[in-house]
Figure 1: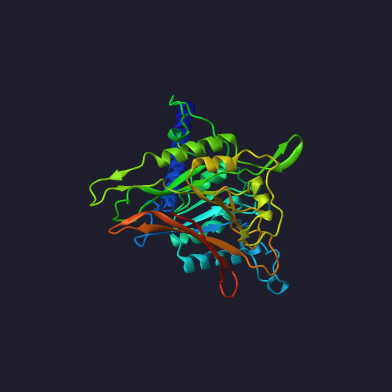
Figure 2: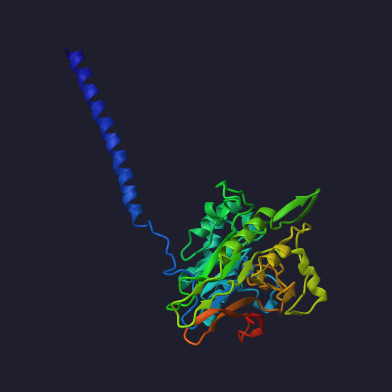
Amino acid sequence: MAMESATQKWKHSFSFLYLFFIWAILYLLHSHVLRHEAHVRIKKNPPHPLRFRSDGAFKILQVADLHYGNGPTSRCRDIPISGFRHCSDLNSTRFLRRMIQAENPDFIAFTGDNIFGSSATDAAESLFGAFRPAMEAGIPWAAILGNHDQESTMNREELMSFISLFDYSVSQINPSVEELSDTAKTGKREAIDGFGNYNLRVFGAPGSHLANSSVLNLFFLDSGDRETVKGIRTYGWIKESQLRWLYHASKRSQGPKKCIHRLPDPLTFPTPPALVFFHIPIPEIRQMYYKTFIGQFQEAVACSSVNSGVLQTLVSMGGVKGVFMGHDHKNDFCGNLDGIWFCYGGGFGYHGYGKSGWPRRARIILAELGRGEKAWMGVERIKTWKRLDDDKFSKIDEQILWEQQ
């Protein structure tokens, strides 16, 4: 009896200890969740879709080749020796804040090599550092990838997925299922190469009859990083699947010409113009050296050996007025090919290569609506200029890219 009683007591004690152990685990897990609930936050989105201001303007800041590394420990490249000691990624951050404060853009386009992957210890931390000024300012922004972004701890798909989750980012990983449905309307989804192919629509001024209509399209494309063609390494290029999507997306965005009869004078709206953003220039840019251009052509065009027909596609779309690129930091010129202006942003970031004595720079693109007798109309003019990160914050090379005839 004594042995049986001892056995029962042992079983009771074991059961109690087991239940206590389970309770303790559940308690700790519950406490962990409660502690972290305070840190769970929802992504901050822009309060409104992209649209022109009430003064009829829409201003874009292009940031090309930010090349953010590890913050204060990433040294500057190609600057005067006198400023080298205290120069780091933080100089790029200050320049971006300076641009935002001075130009007050409605939208920021980061056109690739946002981080310098080979010197970024943690891609997520570097991305936060790169985009922090845009998020702090609460300005809608979008990004595409260059050829260096994926060289850290994230691949290209992970990078675009992560970027799309940042505050005020309107970046997209790729087009929606509906946009990728083939032209035969079978509902079959077409594959698309790359990550970061998407279209952003900019609506008319608030209170105008175009407030709910897209009057400007912004197309973003992934130009890839590095590839091997017939055993030879070359830069990436925009693929046929991307061009097919781009062409059909542009035609869908144009739609039939609209006519509003409820106004005193019925209005027919022209096809909305489009701007295109990608990182690596197309092979035809090399021809610019022998043409008239505005700005500086200081290094060879580093493009792919493959010509995939990007220029022909852009021309066939009918509404493209400007293309904005990066990649070649010491080029900042605009030149015209077949009626379309192709513009470099110029090297922005201090951790990327540059030219000593040649200030880092950024490009501004300004679209302006036409003014009717009683209301704002469609886009009438697109202008551009550059700002230098020098003592005078110089404004240079202002030009009109397109004007409605």
